[in-house]
Image (tube, rainbow over all chains, first blue to last red; front, side, top):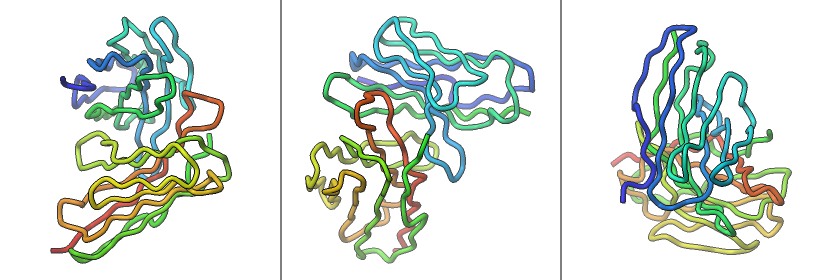
Length: 113
Length: 112
């Protein structure tokens, strides 16, 4: 039982390049989330998927797209990376229903030059 | 969206001392969560609180859900070197199952 896994762990991109961050959970959770973490700030929600087949914008969605591929997998895509997207990205999942506990992956550290 | 006000930002303490940190908001939350994050890792859930006034312990950690539902506290007793890390609070916004707000974190350093 690996919980939430993320790939890659590190990535360096040049401005304008694209990439997809992968996330998978094996806890049979219904909801999945993508956050970014910047120094001195709390985690900020980029996009979320409340259930398989649905996705919605969070607080900071600009420059990102997501795909809920199936119940296990939720990917985050940067179409044209910008230096402002340099950050640590975390995926999280939640069982749903009356449980609000979110479980996080180990993160992807992205640098855009 | 509004983030939570978490204090203190950092703490430097001696091994064996007790630690207190708190989070406040102008919004009402129906759930408070406390996480610990170590360098290069994701946040790990420590304690979940679901009722106003609730006091919950996890080993040497004790957290409380404030009566007003706008704040929460985390205490660590008899700190040890492995308590080092960043502690985050998170509050689940009322009436929006997918709106979780996070504090900026309290960085804890424990000197042996």
